[in-house]
Image (cartoon, rainbow, N blue to C red):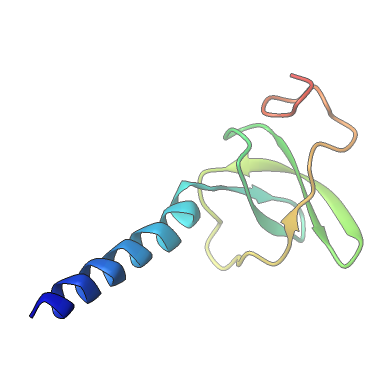
Length: 87
């Protein structure tokens, strides 16, 4: 019985920890790419995929039909944009 409680607690903790970052992230939406970002909604962002970087705008969630298909690219040519280290 004690083992069951520990196992249930471990599973619940793992589910909470692995799911939290995905819910907390905003989405960077470019013309062709979508990536998770920690930049503020409405701000500048970049997504990178296969060496291709595109500028985008941060939205609270992805548009219908768009899946995350790239990684966050940083601040690039806009280091003073809200959320960038220079701002």
